[in-house]
Image 1 (cartoon, rainbow, N blue to C red):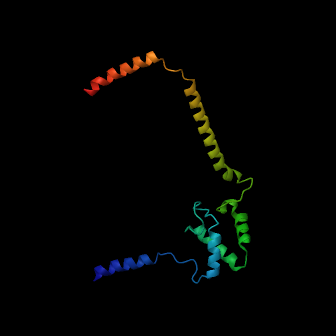
Image 2 (tube, rainbow, N blue to C red):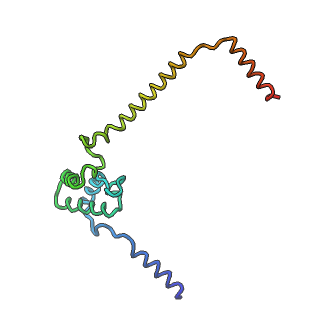
Image 3 (cartoon, helix red, strand yellow):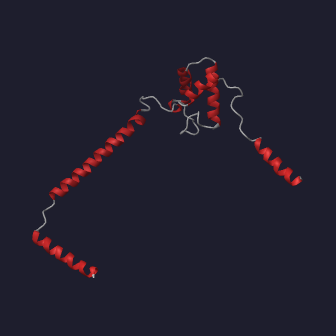
Length: 157
């Protein structure tokens, strides 16, 4: 009996480490607004996740702070403005187009245009090189074909 009791106690102890929910009785309206806003804010720890998707302690704190501002009656724009004021444009998952973020918005297009221009230039040079190549001499061509045919005959046999 004692042998069974120890594993059961250990298994029960692991349940104590489970994470608790952020709030006990969430208000559905507040949670819906929180979810919408949280999908627009970047987790500053994870950086590739929104605060809605992240389990990082900072993301939990930002969700709590957002929930509190919603309860205080702040608008979505006021909440976003507060977060930007405190953490900068980086906190927005889709930062606005301005002088500081222009390169982020323009760089992908510039890379595509540059790649297409490079490809066009390469194809143009290849075409010009092919057009400028001298025409093969018919007598020399027959000689090369005869040499190639002679090389292939032992392989066939």
